[in-house]
Picture 1: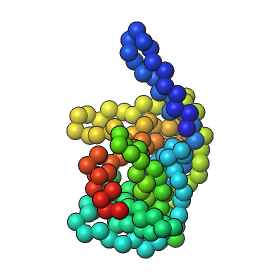
Picture 2: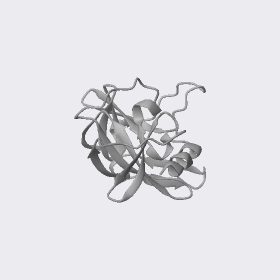
Picture 3: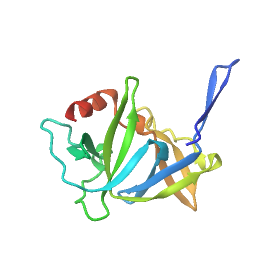
Picture 4: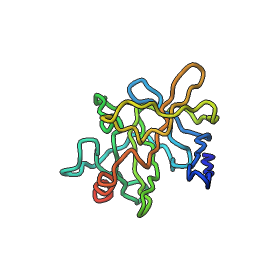
Length: 170
């Protein structure tokens, strides 16, 4: 992703260009995107070992080539109806960056679509839904070919507390 940050010294304002390559995927019929630089790999569904007392959206952990990583169902995290997994369901392995360190985790999605190069002029700011709805995890809304894609800031999808809980699960 070409995240360029320029600072206007006199006003202290920061401008971020969100243009770049995004892996797009489907959840409940809607298309979402994650910056391709955050994606480590895409794997098919595999057996997930449940972790006691984990939040409902944390499905458990998997052993990925000797490394134990926590797995989160993005549908459940976003409050969507659960869906039975099928041959199109997959896990997107991502690197989430916190102030302390990077955390590798898997995101269960309905299906993966494609990698798109999204231009800055195709991305609009996240609309304001009022104080009751947290949209910090949405980078912006991409409009392409008459369709809307919600671009996620994967580093902000989980709160710091949730990230620590997922680290403990692994």
